[in-house]
Image 1: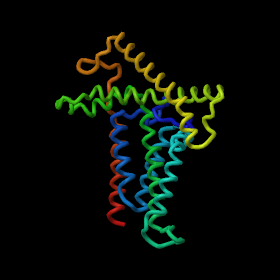
Image 2: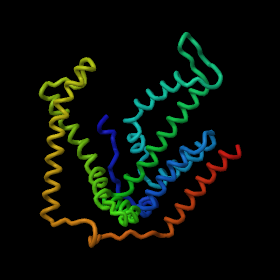
Image 3: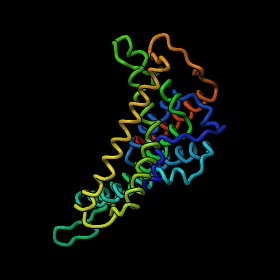
Length: 267
């Protein structure tokens, strides 16, 4: 399961999505979230799904990578959907036995929720799949630069987010190694009752915390040795520049969003 977590991974490429400015990608991701959660009609969800599928195909990243990004959250989606089916009492009754009641409204809410979350995870994964953590840091700092006038620590916030994204794959790999090492020593990580499994996880969590603090200390030392001083006066190797592709992508996204809003109002 840990190997299925692809959050924070970057896949270099030369697709149209890769060439977009990271600032544009962040804005388009926000518009995608609005698009997916605007409107309660099937056609609205279909338009959002078409936009997400188009972006995935244009990125030229294997579809299996997006499937892997969705797999870790499937158990939570199924549990939440089951609660919605049995709790929401809306629409026609399809099944009723004692305190258990299943209605068309509960099924609709559950199906819409699952599809929306899956599309959201797949669409937002494009941001980290097609943009390196460094460019994402620069983009966040540029977008939040007006807050500097309010003495908001924009650069520090962007750097923390970048480091967090950068070390997610590293921590996942480290966790997998610790679990394998503990199993080789005879630890029962995947067997026993729920309480026993929770107790056995201590043998994984403690080494992981120690390793994480050690990596953080090494990173801080490395940055100090290189005289790192972010914020004002810091230069960048690659300057962010928008191109015609960015404006076209923004225009297409706005058109899809407008279509969703129009469909929700008219139909």
